[in-house]
Amino acid sequence: DSFRQFAKAPCALAWSVHAANDKLRRKLVPTTKYSMVELRQGLIDALLDRPHNFRTTMLEIALMAGVNDSEKEADELAEFDRVMSDTVPGCKLIVNLIPFNDIGQDMYQKPSMEAVEAFMRRLWGNGVHAHIRATRGDDESAACGQLATKKQIPQKTLPKAEPL
Image (tube, rainbow, N blue to C red):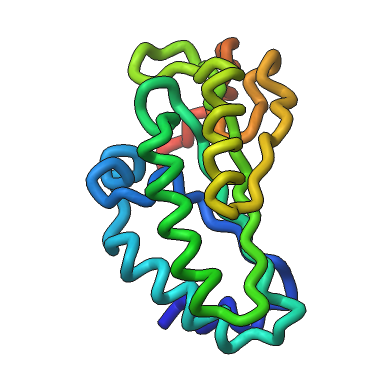
């Protein structure tokens, strides 16, 4: 039902998907409560309630080396997208591929540009409009999805309260 609220929003919608496969998406987004089919259906319902000129939707994919950047994941995403495109007249889906930005941990790594381009070409070959989003700010730990800082921010200490 919360998707119904999006039907009235006068803007393009964006959704951080990261993977169309439920098992992989739960690993990447452990707080997710719903399956991708349920989430997609909610989005479809919202899009069907929107005027045709507000049916543009951006799917954001943070690609991580060896995790979600293979042809298999590209094909799963293309099939996931195809259901929306086939169900919602006038729906324009745009996939933004975002190479993962290193935050100094070992769990996930930035994919090679060749892998990102191959993923994009695979989507194109499946009729999905996709492009690679330029990364900016990664040298300052301020890039999209990079919620970390390299320097310690000093904390202000408040004066101790006097007893009453």
